[in-house]
Image 1 (cartoon, rainbow, N blue to C red):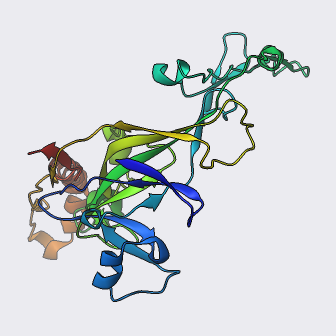
Image 2: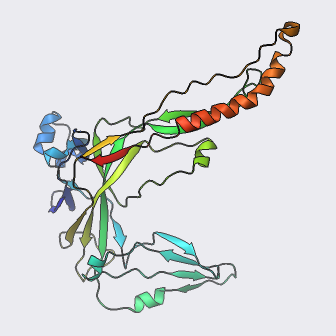
Amino acid sequence: MVTRWRADAGAWAVQINPGCVNGDEVEIDVLARLAPAETLERLDNPPESSTVRAYLTEAPEVPLGSLRGIGKGSAPTGAIQTPGGGVTTTHEPVPAFFLALGVKEAKPVTFQDPNTGVTSIAGLLEDSADLTPYRLLRACDVVLYKDRFGTATNWQQGAGVDGSFMQFDVGYSIPPEGLRSFGYVKLDSQYTPPVPVDPMTKLLGGFTDSTNDSLKIGTVYLLSPYDASVDDPVDDTWTPYVEHSLFWNLMHATNRLETVANTNLVLPLPLAGGIAQPLVNNILATLNDEADKVAEFLANHELAGRFWSV
């Protein structure tokens, strides 16, 4: 990745060295007025105000969007409860490289005794009393995405007399904008890798999986001068740094799912003109539901894909 200040956009921009996913192009969204001439020619010169999908091989320079703060002067990323019943803020740690360049860690702020009616705050005075000069740090993650079908679980209610009370179904969803054919890159303020989902959450129904797989390409950091204020905009006086997390072309594939054919157990009873049939089907419904639930869940529980280098 290469960064430079774009005066026409009033922002720092990043150009990503081109790579392929499954041998195909990788796209990135950019305003038409900032897109490369090769992109505009390929798309028959769209309006300047529109957003176009440029190929990385066309060398687009995309302005950095929302930036997150790291270190002193940044917002908390979360909070944890203290043993005494208070709450302490948490912050993203500053990489050691930038600590050496003058960035300071953000001081946690603790709110004590929230249940007594009197709240004491610790940490603010200590931070404001530190008058030694420091620099601000902002960051943006560059992330590769590949669309796929997502898994959705649901319970379908039966009538009982048909041999089923409740059956567990695994369905599939697509992104709201539709499946993109190519992999694509987005600039995220902070990338959060997907975490495994508890199987019980899926089994309870009402679960919808992600409709894409993702992988962080790298992070762009912007370091302020020493005299910068927290409210100052990020401009061309800041210094860019790039951390790379990915260097190779990739392959991508999703899990292969096999079709599950479930047949309800039914015990035909021709006696008395079939009067007892609904009763027997109700008894068998529980077994049918359990067998269906296990078969569907074990065979079609997720479509999460994988990236690998070639």
